Image (cartoon, rainbow, N blue to C red; front, side, top):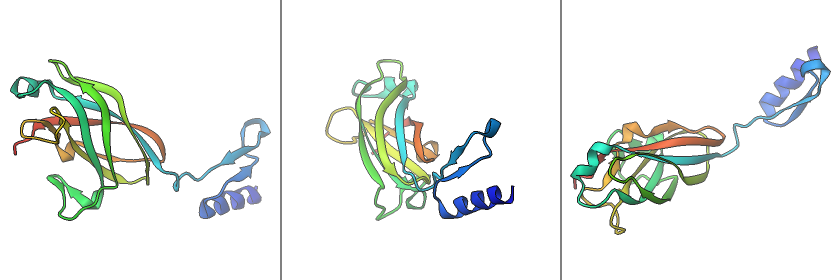
Length: 162
């Protein structure tokens, strides 16, 4: 029994795979440390339907976004000089006249597990984020990334005021 605990402790410290004979009915299992694996974000998008009547353009287009490390943004957006961990663009989104959730419309790979801010806008005209385009509110889009694939919903609940 002492050897099993020693192997588990060694594996935890080394971040390597190890074999253990502690599985059910004497089966051999493998323990893997996943802390060094990158996160894959599968993004869905949620547009507050109350914004649509206020929009000048139809609620459709591509979401243009960036992902920032926790220290590089705040509840009001990126800090001056911050460099995003990743920039991305969604598939074409069409929220119709009701808004709501559109699932699995963008995938972002290769970000280390950490707390991040997902920021951006729905570009309704194809020429960047303009006044009146739906945008993210940072504190609604701060998430903890975990190793492997995870689903996250990007919320847009404000129209770009500038």
